[in-house]
Length: 277
Length: 250
Image 1 (cartoon, each protein chain N blue to C red):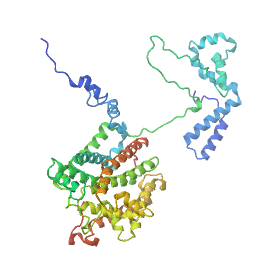
Image 2: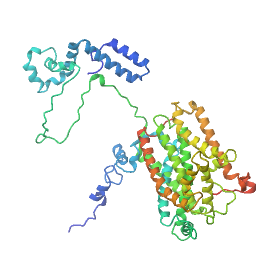
Image 3: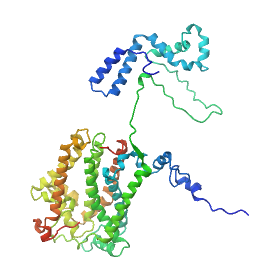
Image 4: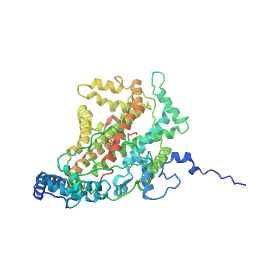
């Protein structure tokens, strides 16, 4: 039975809907809740009417073998449409429906019955909400997406093979704890921090700032509560992140190429590059 | 006289037991919507992906494939790393720095040793770069917004692990470049508040970079950190799907 056919209290519906919307509930959910309230309130107010409607809803089932004898057996209750079932359905209007007590017998399949089962759910009308999920514009992962991934992988691998065949990774002389090379540099991804050491106390440059960056990065989604992903709506966030990223990149480049012996400033085109990967 | 037919491999029971229905290697694969979906769904590797993806995700300039390529680099580094493990001992006691001589042997005497080492080293640097760029891409497309907040945090952990893996590996050649880069890098830990000495000792297994450090970082590099990395990668990939696949469109 659809919402339109269900007996309901329109006033209650409108009130509940207004209340839900005022509380900021999403419209689809608010409507569902208001419908539920309207139907329940109608049933509470006039149980007989509700029973009649319930039987009307069940009328199509009256031609089943089980329903027909029932109708014959209780002619007194033969109300307009499917009245016999109305009697059976009447208890439904009370708050709770009783299930038959468990018999303890494990059902055995009928001989020759097909080996399959069905799942059947009974859903009260107020529980039905029309859920419309946008399927969106989607394509099959195979072949479209997987091929793209595979090609990207092959290109990267080919590039790396060529690069690794031509350019050897550095291997200097044996480690010697008594001979400090000049300059001594950390791996390139830490050179931004090493550069900061020139300007700040080691505890600030080596502990405070890296901790702040890592924790700050992890906290981004909880700080930036702007729901939009459109670049035009997130100018502040984008500006801040770009500045941070560029700041790190510039410090790293300075530490890599513009620092020479004694970690002093050099111009890479004049004094040479003191950088190894 | 009956002709002897060569058995059709693709119709054999063995073949069919390996390739599930929908596999493109199975006889009867049709280019239909159903079989395309099954090809993804019935494959242990490909079912990391949903059967369908948003069309805009195919656009190269949306993701630049950075996340996928970072994962590929992780696989490549694992494979080349396992190869190198056959020829490398993390020992550098006085009188014989096996770690260093093993490096020289890998470069000169091991078949493909030099190529594998180069791939491993360049791949490691590239992975730090690709993971950082992947993070930037995710930021600029707003892909960390609800419901993906937690996956962003997992991503930050993965970035940290990537740096850790790269840095622990940096010491292993046991040359001048390695120990002094590590000395500079770890000297900062000595400035942590309250636990400076303990932090330094925990990192180095001593007061300075020593053979103890080498063993410690070797174990972290080949076992400890990759193990943690795989756990976080699993959560990362799983959450991508649970959070509704690729983000966007913008």
